Picture 1 (tube, rainbow over the protein chains, first blue to last red):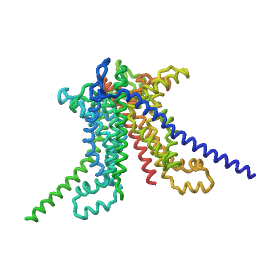
Picture 2 (cartoon, rainbow over the protein chains, first blue to last red):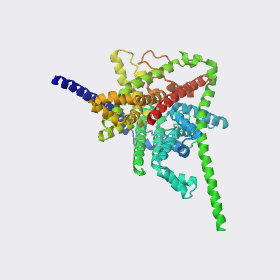
Picture 3 (spheres, rainbow over the protein chains, first blue to last red):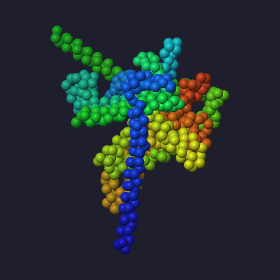
Picture 4 (cartoon, rainbow over the protein chains, first blue to last red):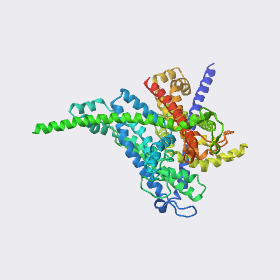
Length: 292
Length: 301
């Protein structure tokens, strides 16, 4: 009798242990493809990278010594302009949402931001094509159609919801006494917000901003119909411009070995860049965390 | 004299305050206008195709721009197949991670490592997944297809699903973790005090308690899978025929837009691509909103 019970208990404990083992196995199995990708990109990429790789533009097929300078500079410019557009609007939007939690306008704005966050990136590309690329082409008689600027606007549309939500979430957590103390001292509203509330929440706001930059830095789909890509070097934001993800997509799907090599190198650079941004986000969150 | 200049700066401050408040309101309105404008633009631009093709568009089985025939059925099927296959592959992994991080090891170095792995999976750009898939996964799938005796394309629905499955793991995993952490410890302790094993606690307390939250995580993953463009475009094979099996090449709504948008010459061609975009937009937005509503309800309880 007694031994019977303990056998049942043993079975249940064994089942529990087996389940735990399965959970751990499946959890860490995910690391396999990730490391396979990271190692493969590192291995393929590192051999393609040299000084010429950074300073040259892609060479014509069959010629050695091409580089990706146009995509590197293009990516930096496109992402920087997108950030300049999206950060102020995003932070102000976040401030409005955290300050007006229950107004009807705020709930509609919050709903809009939710929709924006769920919008497929390729659809953003389509819409910006009709908002910016096409009208600009018609206005200038086709002188400016695909431009880096339109690519930046498309990427800004992707950044915006992330910045708004992270700003809102951060500022919501700050105690209302902070704001009240400022107002009680006779500070005008905008100074209370810009000089007290925002600096207190800077770690959350900043990590949201960097995270959103990390996300758009690897985006390709919204750039297909906007920045378009360019095999020459340009810093003019009114011209089509190459970016790292665009270059990887175009060259990876091309039939030429030389171009694949460029794409591998570019992949490694892009990966390092995106991972660095993620690490910086973590450090920023830790370092500027406000102790309340 | 001093007083009046003080007054002036005071008025200046009050004016600034008003300007600031109006700017904030303006930006809130701008956000709404932007979203509404998105929808309007998509509807407006897909009007020519809606008028010309009507409902036959969604169920038309042939997509042949050369002879001006546009049927979206192959892409609908391709999108559904890749997304749900990817979801089915990824769920065991993402739920395992959620249970491990939420229940077995909420703290400690092992969970720290796993958390970083999950974040890394989410951080890798999709074009890199596509590139890797094209050069590493495709040959593997090809030899697998040879060994089971189907046409060895390599590229196709199955390969895209594999890549997608990896990419969407973090969404359901991190949300599931949050949900599992919110299970009140009194409930779990009650079950333990009745003599339940850990597995029984997870099965009878944690999973039933968090099922709506886990479902929301799956929905967000699905939304992500439906909308994913680049990685899928690179490995799905871009064939506009109806896929005959899960190993056949196909196209998703997003990948056909990415491939053909800049080449679309005729008005109906272009606008039928935009109609695909509109459809994709509406579906993903609805899925995301349902997911978010469930999460909100769950966290407020």
